[in-house]
Length: 299
Image (cartoon, rainbow, N blue to C red; front, top):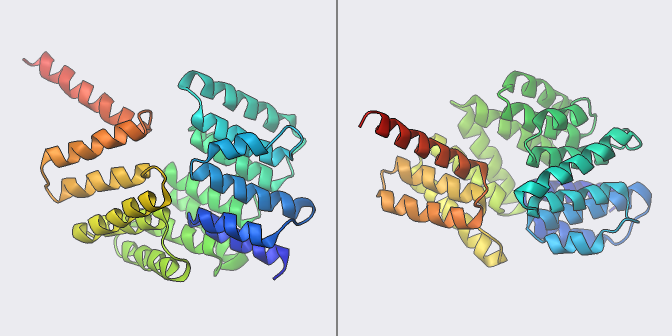
């Protein structure tokens, strides 16, 4: 198999959340040359960062490494930094982007946009990838547009992805993302897509959560809870932290099943220990404070 085709396989594994496969596949491929080698390593280190193996990115990526890999390392630094240091990492990224020397490097634009997304800088992320011609850039554009409630524009970019390669894994995933947002009968189509990908590539925590979301939308709460249990078991098997989406989806599922508040609170407590600074937790805390303030005002 040629290096180009092997990178397509790496991309599929990466966007499906099959990070162990990314690393093992990249290892079996061996060193490539030029941009292909940078892309291979970028998938490897992005996979490590996604699994929380931040020490690997910190140790193995140096100032002599390609700029793309340095951005991956910077993203890792951002994710592990205290709140008051996160802004410093984003400012460093701003400098690298504004330098302009990497403006034509599509992989650089993707990994930089991924870091902006982590920092909640959606406008900056979209600016980097919205005119992209690769499936990676178009897929990220679809993801961002859906997050800002512009499903209409997301559909336009999805159409471009279909024109490039409708059978590509990333195109199929993007189609499912759009279908989930559209709702109705599209939830069933999205579920079929996710389950087909699961059958073809195997289970990942990301895929299992995506399947559970579709099941919740279709009020298949028992099935969703079972799927989320599989996601938790997989995290334990991989010896990584339980995914934040798994916690959130489990609480939503238990709420709809009218389970005891104590059961939901136990999940919430574990979630807070795992990711105390998560936006969802901050939002819930703000809502509780607002409710308490309202109660006091009328007491």
